[in-house]
Length: 476
Image (cartoon, rainbow, N blue to C red; front, side, top):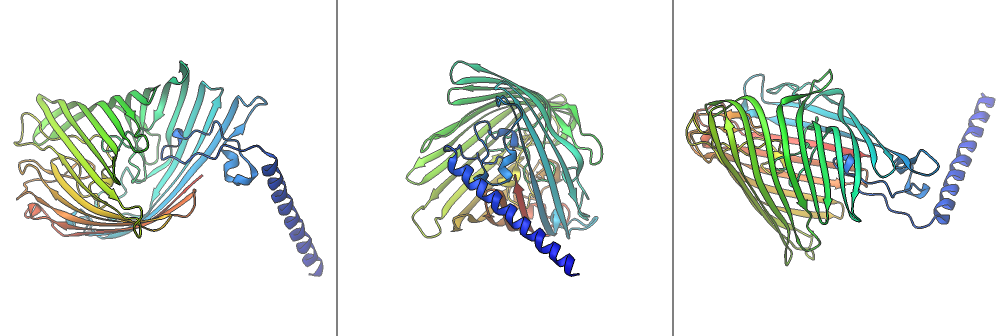
């Protein structure tokens, strides 16, 4: 026993000595190195991070050592590695306005791990691959384990880039393969960051940098998730178009301009059935309004056909906020309006807006009861900062159906209820507390309560909904 204890003490001493040597070496390196480029911020879509100018230093920590790994002596070939781990516990009561089958009360946990490798050769060639595994414990609510919950060892993204300069500051980039998009406010096209399995598309995109503008032209097909097998694109569900963005400069205004096209096979919209092809023409203006005010306006018009019926639909959205930077808790108060057209009669021409692939969760209530179709919604709220890295947000929503002759639509665009008895769909209270522990770890806690409106009376169960959740995200 004495010999064993002696060996343990020696091993501990060796470990402490090695740790001290490693720390001393890191300090010496940091002191002898020129000023370094700080690590860039992490992005939701990891391919949008630029680690090309960053060089790891011991002082930055061991995680950043994998963000720029030089593969040749000249530094022309380099590799960036990273990933993300997410977990969220959810508790529901009254889900689906009190759906009876299989039940409306449950608790479950969602987990996801993504890992990516980003290989660069020179300034013009790049290959990016990102895999994921997303899992859910038993979910005894309508839909069970949904396609947005589970993807076992799935391929999220895999593409090749070829980039060329266009003059001194402009450039063009051709991307071929599986990729994800995050456009503007995400009201229409989003990876769908709230759910466990994010959206992806197969196809080609062309990115241009032209002065202050970035332009993305793309032709893609939606990737359908197979929970246990390979994920494949459905070329009957296409998304194509052009999205142009000029970001808001400090104290100024920015613009999004877009023309989006999509197809879906054999859909039914308020009694009109057939293959769908739509085009969405829209714009968004956003940024500072001066004097502590900020605001954005976005709207779009849709044309096309569903079967033999023509499409004439629209949506409009606006938000205004006021920040009191010098006040206690640095509050920001805000108010917003959202509206999306519905259909005035079943069959024939189609007036119901199609929300495409939105992040509705961020705009129409965290309980995810309603989508951006046949709806008029208003919200008012306040953000408070109890600590520099902590934000508490409280929001009150009101929801109304624009047209009683159309349906109430769920957050995923599916029909939630038909035969509406009025316009009042309900009201919702959202509370969300977020805290950034450090640049790698975020935690959050939320609660929502939905008061069901009288428009749903007689259409099925009409219980109020309660939704509580606790989550964390680790990024590296």
